Image (cartoon, rainbow, N blue to C red; front, side, top):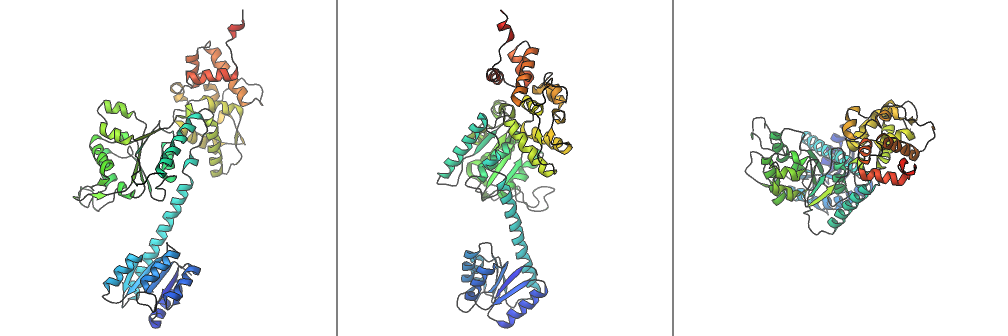
Length: 476
């Protein structure tokens, strides 16, 4: 049988007609004659739909709706009212009915309304499923890494969330997330939403660089029918779609100056006006933006509004690049290999010490996104359980600009490491690489750091950690 329907009707003939008609259309139907009889059935059976009369002996149909939805807030109800009883229909809708029918009820109309309400229920269930699945993959747990820069960033996110919990109003502060392309700015925005006060509302993401500038306004604010040549129907914009939740504007620096003024108005008074409309609409949403641009420089060059810049950066969170996150690259690599391994049916993959040295020595100009995408191909083509350096398809064309140059390039492309011991540890491989590069540059710290894709301070830290000293110091 199909969906379950409970009919609450004291007219036995009408109830039987409804029951037979719906059963013939593959519905699982239960019938009772009063609200008092219906409530225990609803609590025990949780039907998909309740079809109830407005006038019942004892408790009314409206009272039944209120009591039933207290048991199951997702329950769908269709109210049947007497002919011309508009007030009853209004009361039913206020009480939580999904739709109503007036007597006499045409059976064909009954089927149409039942199908419409059940389809709305299925859509809500699908939406709820995807929202729950999305929430499980988001939040602070999605921010992987334990390096000092990542700990500092996660501490700041936690401070923001804690401050929001103490706020009395709904107007949460605007957040600007800064970071290079591929660092995971979207994950920070998701953490602020799904671990925050608006986690039950929608999370609407929009990349401002993804469509031409002349279409951005309609996409964000919507339009009325006939607002422009191709506007054949009314369309709700993404701002309205995010009402009650969070709007995440990625690459906000790509918005042109005209639209920046409208975004500023949205931030200031939380109102929008669809294209072609004369009426303003109030919206209740939280705005998070992200950029890989230097907005301060854009302000100085007149490419970004000064007032919007200050309005966007009430709270600023900086996402560190992967090259500054130390051993996080290995933690992330293990995570992605496990993730891709599940997808391609290759569990238990691990990196050789030489491969780890390559991962650690490269500067990752594409950041976490580059690492994730590169490792998908690595997993896809992996023949054994151990991933060697020759399987890491680091982009040779980016090596010079990325800091992985002659010393690391042979490793990145499967060349010899000069490591005779196959059981050499990662620390030994790291020591060997650093010693080789320092020797090649005659211990020029700046040049060696560039070749390894490190900062001078990071290289000095490794020299001290590994206990390395320049050889000529002991020649006299």
